Image (cartoon, rainbow, N blue to C red; front, side, top):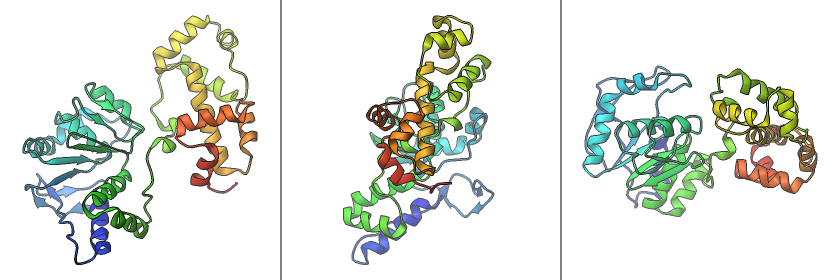
Length: 305
């Protein structure tokens, strides 16, 4: 709720008294609002604003999204009314679901938290959901990735209205990274909802236990007593991907962990997860995370355990 107002307040101080600041209000169609975590908020009545920022809401995997959105009907109506008047709207994280409910994402590019991007794309097939993007603006509608991406949006707003120097200085004061371009390095596929079919789970388990082995589709099919065609079909039906695609993402997940927590060389890590050529591994890793292995380690290093 207050990440954007806080950063805009900092920008006003950084810019100095001779520059126009930002007027920020927390408005609601309700008289009383309780934020996620139980904090009661003081809000003002809805009014016309230049930029309406829609925060996310508590959304857990498995939650009845339809029921949740139905309970937020007043907010959806307010968003629809605001944009009908020609004003800018921004959704933070899963606030994109409210924009979708208001019909604002049809024919537009959008993003949201990587954890819920597939669900957003399913609910809004007319939208072009870009799960790798941190901030997407399309025809007056902006959506962002998970909640810390509010800072990426706010810095861009500051950059547009107060200049690059103020935005850069504000980022330094707040210890906010102003050079991020993708949420891909933060994706952890293990946190995504897992398919509920036992066959694909058994195949995944076997692949996870044999990350360093050469991928052999015929041998994998023999292990589960099915033809290669049957294995590919059943796995794709249950997961939406091929066993090789899953294996690659699982290898990258393991490599990320080793890069974050050990001093092992990139070549050693590459060999441990089945790639004799570190160059091939580096290309695959960059494709999945948006960073080369050494750059990823520099950014996410946690110290060896």
